[in-house]
Image 1: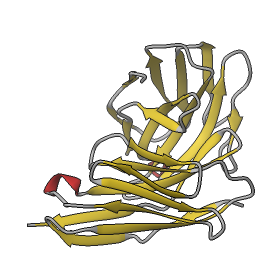
Image 2: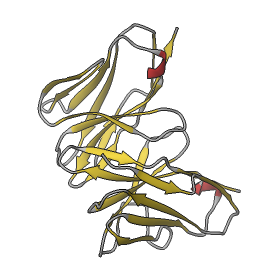
Image 3: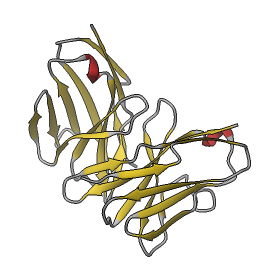
Image 4: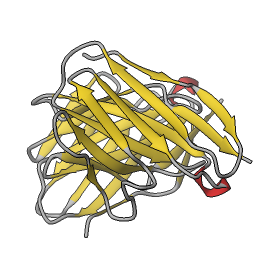
Amino acid sequence: GQSLEQPSEVTAVEGAIVQINCTYQTSGFYGLSWYQQHDGGAPTFLSYNALDGLEETGRFSSFLSRSDSYGYLLLQELQMKDSASYFCACYNTDKLIFGTGTRLQVFP
Amino acid sequence: SAVISQKPSRDICQRGTSLTIQCQVDSQVTMMFWYRQQPGQSLTLIATANQGSEATYESGFVIDKFPISRPNLTFSTLTVSNMSPEDSSIYLCSVEQMGTGELFFGEGSRLTVL
């Protein structure tokens, strides 16, 4: 089977840095994606790692270690608007399977 | 990028009835994906809809319960049949930006079954 595990909830204060981890088990692996979803909204794409290492996009960075079946999303300089659910996801052949999701709450 | 329109955005239905959700994309795409997201949960793939062939269903989902149509490269429908309160969920349509690993989602259809 295929599974992607994440912590259920993370809390932090404005301006802080937070890391959301994702460990996965999959029979075939093509890369790890991250999505953000605000309450009542649709998921939106944040990043994609096909290779090991760190990808940086503004305040958000994503890391992948294929040998460890592990990745993380790093959010820096947290803002209140970053309060949302975050999902890692990976492809199983041609379909995207989502992780369990992490709810991030940012406090003033 | 792709713009996806889904309707209805929400509906309240009676047990035993059926509801059809429509998904319209502003560009031609090969595959369309239907996901379900129960309150506070992650996204679960229901099926993949390919134009000109039957949809491919994931484990736990069957065609009789969730029939899907894909009449052309920009449109698909998902029907939730013989609904029960357990079908109360958000149903999301999505398409892939080829080669990028990125999925675009419609705004979702929030279904409440009484």
